[in-house]
Image (cartoon, rainbow, N blue to C red):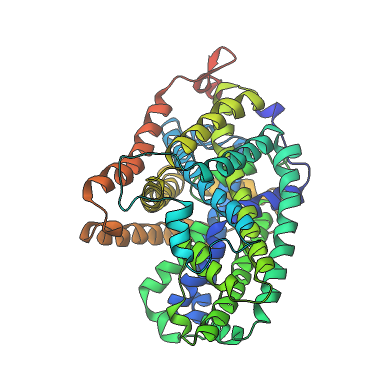
Length: 503
């Protein structure tokens, strides 16, 4: 896609809907409430807000500026900064490839559970139902890759929807889909929250969620958790925002858009916390146990705890449909943005038109997803790959990109000038300090803290050989393949892209 013929968002609102849709994903609903609860409750909002203002929004602005200035997806945008820097761009593309492959499967589970909610199909034992009946998970990681047919069909449906939206283009596909999905998600989730806060015992859950433990503010791990949550929930560090901003019109408000997207994402996380803990409070009161015994996150919260709660509440079927449909839509909006990075990057570097790029690149990603994850061993593979690609893929790639842009190439000032030329909120020294000093220090500390834990004990008590192959192998493999792809002499219009950039 040549810059002069590049697709564009129809409206600023369309771009914002897509950016917010990318940021609002499964983690907002099933990760933030528990992280906040475990790290000081209401007091957690102080470091959380500080992290949003000193790392989240500044990083968003940097990625918006990179994509908008060079009107390109990550590999080409970093190439135009410096030829060696394009490795970062391809690294981010490979990270998106890995995430897309397993993220689609979780969305497929949400689709299935939306249907299960009508009859409360999980019965009296949601945990056994999930792991034995639905996932048919092996007792331990295994080489047996028998397909689980019940997952296969909804997974194929998720991929058909994702690729169909992408094939329609930026304006007619991604923008139109998000203009439908985001308002629908908001309406459904607000209805879910209203129902949750009217349940008996909801106040106990909300007290547990919001009760501030001010001593937590002096704990360094709480601040690391706050920065980590902001970082993972805003879709920064793996090329999505560089890609989306590359389709903006030339006169676009970058810093203002970043503020809107950042605060919208955080507002939804707070809404999710209210809904989740009001519901947990009901279950705790119903069972006569403390909220702390039910508080959890991730798959356990969504597919075990919530089905149990739904079975014990009045009109639980409707609540279940709203909850799992919300998960599905939140997942799809993020999924579309992740796959667009892969498709758009290859299209930028080869000149492929959108539909062939979607069919070839998106189709290959879908094939890998379908072959690996709806299997009896897929759950273990998903768990380990997700952990390592997040901790040692996204975080490290983001750290390297900030160091290269801020310290090595000294591009913060030019990017600041580019953003200020079209933005209502002007950037200055504070923005450069947050990106050049605070963000690298926090990301570096997050990585070091994670590595210390990783090297002291095996993640999830898995065998070292399994972690080496499915964890470290995948995380390092993304980097190695990124280096290889940056060396490939990609051609477009008879010239290598390097020649185009130089010419």
